[in-house]
Image (cartoon, rainbow, N blue to C red; front, side, top):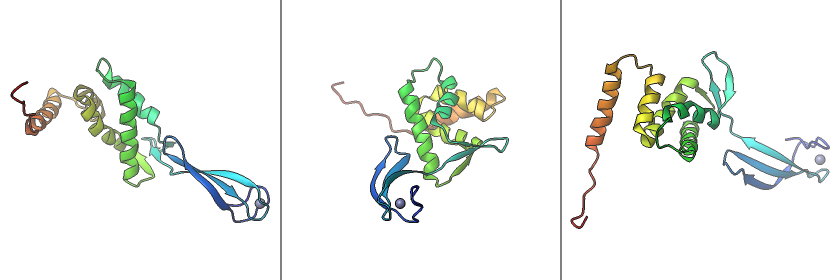
Length: 160
Ligand SMILES: [Zn+2]
């Protein structure tokens, strides 16, 4: 990183801090040549490849607006949606990729949405996975039912 003042090719980091949302690091640097200070920001880039091949930066807002419609009338708050978008971003970043297909974003949305609200999940899945028959719904619902049945039921205590 060249010093922006004297073009000296080296600089020393005097302070680093992570941004509030945890997605970037801001560093204060000092030039050992002219002694002036400047800041740099590092962000691990994450881009979405749209169906038409255009790259666009990953956006939690877009995740939220994509899911909001499926959540209409459901007991899902804006806070829930923000957490969901964060989970999606974490899942995508954890895969270590810097580019993700728009289609795969949909896949990353399904698990946390299912945890949040199964009706919203079915609505979203029906659009995203292009359900075109009642059988598609039936098999999705059957899968959800099976998994409910497989879950350990809470044990009630006698004095309840
Ligand atoms: Zn300098």
